[in-house]
Length: 296
Image (cartoon, rainbow, N blue to C red; front, side, top):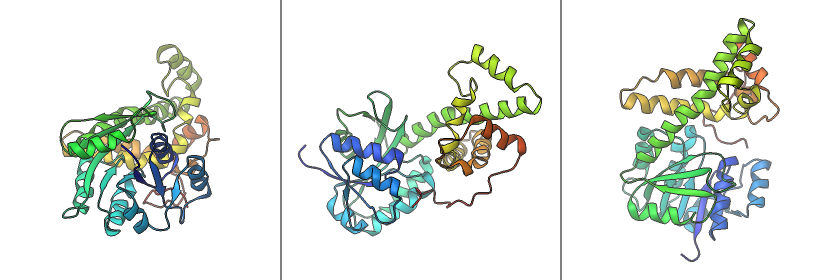
């Protein structure tokens, strides 16, 4: 396809790996370093991202802009890109509800922007076959975005139909995958409260291997990510209500993840700590930026 300029907002752990796949496929990928954390800057250097001096420069340079940020920030990021005068393909690849996706699309109404709905499933892409980028919307724009990742560790999957389908698929998958961690923690906290936690873990290892319930080290992986998962649960609840499905599971999971926010990006947290957070019944006292943007 020749040279392509792509913008990425804002490359956290997932976004940086997504950007790296586009670089591998031959794109020049731009980001905004101003105000970002040292960890973000290190990732940008590692993956060969190019620095833009302002969002206006990024908007003028790039033909495609990818938004990969916490869902609570998605609408704000879209507004910033629209205000910068962007005129290309805007891909919202965040864990947002179809209703939120419609709001994001509305931000660009009447402009030269074509919006593509995206949803990433799986871990940050490192190896082929584990991470997918589902896309829906305008056929030409979707094909253009999919081509950015041909032959990379991020597998593009095109969904026929309008904007909203990719977001719905992403949230439906996350509802099962991530709420399972909250359910496992709930079961462990219940067992711990009655003095049978070790017995529960032994039973789960025999009956439900390879699940978050089978070992506390599996459960522990949810702790550092809970600050991002909580707003995602709110989006899942909204999507459920939109089609008349009970939203209580997602809302309860959001409450569970709220109690783990103090462990943001802390790889040393243990499953035992997460269980204790629930048993003690004390929500995290950490003050959080509700936009959910990566730490600056």
